[in-house]
Image (tube, rainbow, N blue to C red):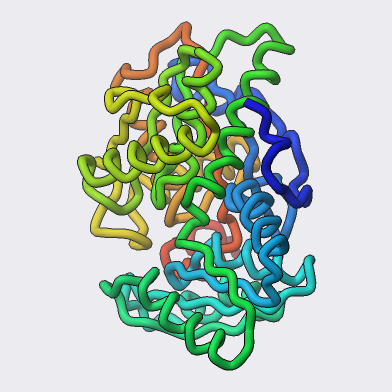
Length: 338
C-alpha cells in the first residue's frame, strides 16, 4: 500500500508523539493509557484535519485551483485548518459556517476557530442549521466559478477517500511506533464525526492485519448512521488504494452514548474530561470533539470495558482553539482566591 503514489503536500509535523499518560492511568485505575498526539500536527494549533489536507490540498494544486472552499459548524476545526493550509500555499479560502447550536454568545460566534479563520485570510458566510451543507457549498462555488475563480471544494471534515488517506497513513505511523517500542496495543479509541478519521484508520489497520480493535466515540449522528457513514467511506477508500473488501461491516464500531443534547453542545462528562486531561496531563481537549471522545473513553474504563492489564490508545484529534469560543461552559469561580 504505497501512499507515495498519491499527491501530497508535506506540511504536518509528523510523526506525532505517542505518549504514556501515567497520572490519568493512576487516577482511573484501569488499563495503561497512551495518547496519540494528533493535536500536535502543527498548522494553526494542529488537529486531525491537517493529515487529510496534505492529500486534499495537493489534489487542489494539481487541478490548478486558486481557491479552496469548505464547510463546517461555526467552531469548525476543519475550517480553521483549511484556512491555514490555504494561506500557506497562497490560495484564497472561503468557508460556509453552519449554525448548528443557535448560540448567540459573542465568543462562540467570533472567537476561537472563527477568529483564526479570519486571521488566516479566509472569508466566511453563515448558513442556518439543518441544510445540506455540501449542496450549499457547491452552489456557492458555482457562482464563484462563473466569475472566473478556479474553486476546489472540500467536504465537511475533509472526509472523502482522498482525505481519508491521511488516516490510513496515521495507522501505519502508530503501528510502527508501537512496534519500535515493543508495545502490544489492545484498543484504539477516538472521537468520530464526519467519518474520515475512523474510515482511514480502519482501512490502514485492516490492511496491515494489525488486529487492534478500533472504537469511534460519536459526536453527532446516531449509532447506525455513524457506522454506515464510516463503513461506506472505508469501502471507497479501500477501493482507491486497491484493497477492496479489506474492511467488513462488523469492523466498524461506534458508540454514540456521549453526544448529549447535540453536536457542539457541551456535556458535563465532556467538561469533566477536559478538566481531567488539563489538570493531570497538561493536555487540552475541546468541548465539541475530543472531550466527548475522552468522556466516552473515561466512562468505558470506569465501567470495566477497557480493563486493567490492557494497553489502550486515545487518539487526540485536536481542537483546543475551540475552547475560547466555549468559555461560558466553565465555572472559573472556584479558581479565584482573595
